[in-house]
Length: 487
Image 1 (cartoon, rainbow, N blue to C red):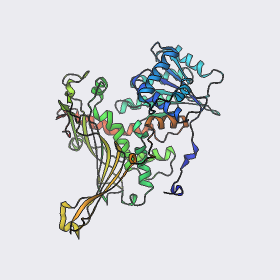
Image 2: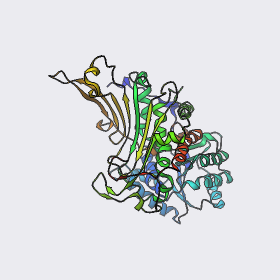
Image 3: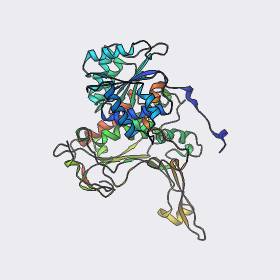
Image 4: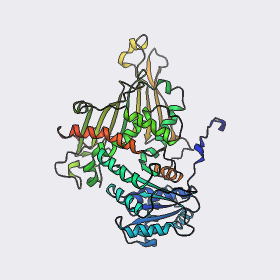
């Protein structure tokens, strides 16, 4: 296709700004698996400004050389270059240094402040909290006490990036937001949900609003149902300590699935700026009414995997037998919830959100099932045999879009289902930056479009808190055999 058909949005030409990136918890699992490799890939793509510096902040006694060895190992294991890009690593290594300190140690923050004020240091700072959630308010207060909260001025900024979970319920989310907002301005707080950094998730808004053949049909008059699924074949692995306190609803439903719901159901924003986009997402959340406990029990299903065989054929132990899971745990590893968005466009249309572990397939996708044609012609002959039109938006794996339609079978007076499909992976030029690459670059640019605002997080907790309260006196989750479809 001619390049004249492409529309480069440019989005005000936002580019990463020079900054010192401080990774709190730099020796932890998240930093090693995601953040350090993402920085390496940004370096390979020449996306980091020249004077960008990176400081690892953690308790371990490593020193600069020890941190360099850890970072190189992380980049070799998780980076996307093969063979390893030695030139890019050499450039990144020159940016790296280490600062040992406890998150509760005021002197460590004072030492950090002195580093950031050294001659020639970038005037901007990006603080990435790759720590346990309970450390978020501790680090934010430590930064503010060292006069490292929000700053303004030519080329000067201080931003803080906070990983999910944003609290464990509505009350704790509000308390966390209050602490963060006491230390940083709201527009300098970047609450990260890595799902929003996936290319195919970002495409949801482009797909809906850049194609006139779909948007006019995107309502209760033409759509029968919408299903949003994030299904996993693996169990909880070594996350028992966290997962047994959270469960599928807090771990996945409150953030990933509800964020996808917002992108599917939002109205066209006034613009592509962060405020316009996030305003529309909040409107979706506020359109989900407060259901009674009885309604939520009728609209939801929860399960917990029992011993079985994984989708790959390996034996799997029961959730109750996983490490660091409490005896007799009632924690759900599967949840399905039917919601309605009570606005003019979608009133009465069921949205089903479904996620689980130890299931028979691995997929993240959105299925939009359209209503069957009127019974005046083919439906009067075929009835339920006439397949509905289903639009599948696959987020992973095999990212792409599939549209099911009906067509005549050659040589017979027969209607059969066919499919139009587009797969990103089948295109030679399809490159998918890792979600953390995109989100780190956006945070350095000051673009918060793909990050979660305080009121978004709180509205999502409103839904999940009500669900958890309805479950509390109810029977425990239904058992399902690992490697099956779920309860």
